[in-house]
Length: 327
Ligand code: PBG
Image (cartoon, rainbow, N blue to C red; front, top):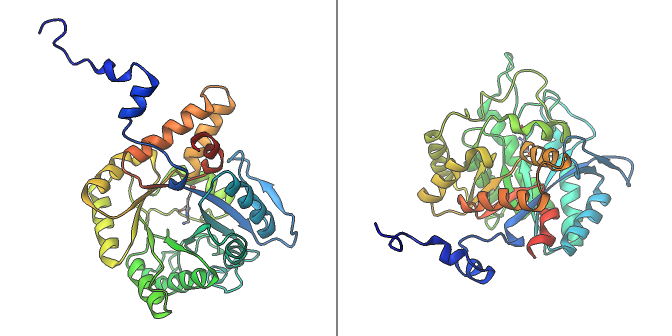
């Protein structure tokens, strides 16, 4: 090959204008869903910073409403809400109580900001005294089928409160079908299900379990969440959830599973969500706090990578922070 014959990729990188013309992926404010933690507290002004998630707090309902308002002024369009109930019990009744903490928060958010897209996490682990995602049998194993009805009730109560999308994160088999049927029976044909279809048993949920007070009291979640070693199984989970009626498929966590995200993008036409989880947030925040990473560049690169791998939307605790950067 002679000088001049080789590929001259630098031609299209020379100026800002050229780079803008050939850019393949772009992060938009509308792609982002901010995660929030709401606490059933008697103190209307309750706000407690979460140590392992710098910049994030647990909020009372009214504090949450105020915080979301500020974020919407920056361009936030969607939020996912996680609840910390005042009381827990073995059956997680707080998850499907009509006056439960998430139900009350969603009602207030939707009456204050009708244009906000509110997603709810449908799971029992924040509401059960044992911290598992469903009902337990005598041996401490999560019972799959009896749990489905409780998940379905949870989803219906979230939608009655005003949720725009329900997102089951429990990893019980058959829950998308159970939730779809219950929503339809209640007349909520128009409400989409965002399934945590490919959810791994990940160490990166550590900070979330402090934030949402949802660590299992014994054992772990490997009996229902996926083995991090498995890729093909992710395709089977996605296909199963689609067949059951999922409208959006999610991969979670995001960065350690970009291969799975890409495979879902290539194999399904459904919208795909990625969840950049608490540990991914904490990791970046810790390095940034130490001065080891540039905040804006590292966070935007991480989110762009998730989008490039195939995500249409990203659940991230960085949404509020990046909005001014991508406006
Ligand atoms: C509830 C749920 C969890 C997360 C989202 N929904 C915890 C878990 O599965 O243990 C984790 C999110 C995060 O780490 O940011 N089941």
